[in-house]
Length: 85
Image (cartoon, rainbow, N blue to C red; front, side, top):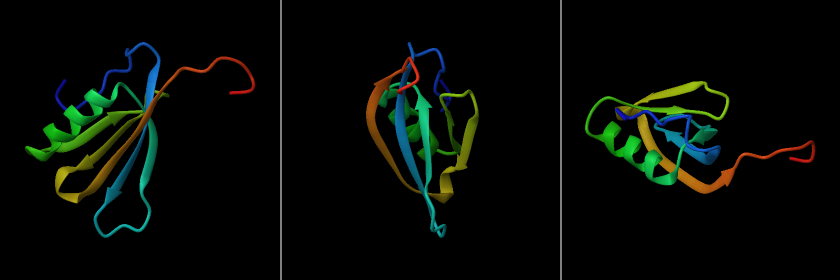
């Protein structure tokens, strides 16, 4: 996996909040993947390198490991269908 979450996780997304040191605002994204995949990407980043996540629209977010303050992982949600989503 190399710190990257796979967008082919069956339509499952997880809200992830990333706190960055010395930055007032956190990064919030709906990452494609499971909680375990997000945790594995975070653990890989701590070993050296950067945290790389893919959001539900296919965009990649990369944060250097040295800048990470915290990562908060929310509940997984399935892909929504319809106008009321």
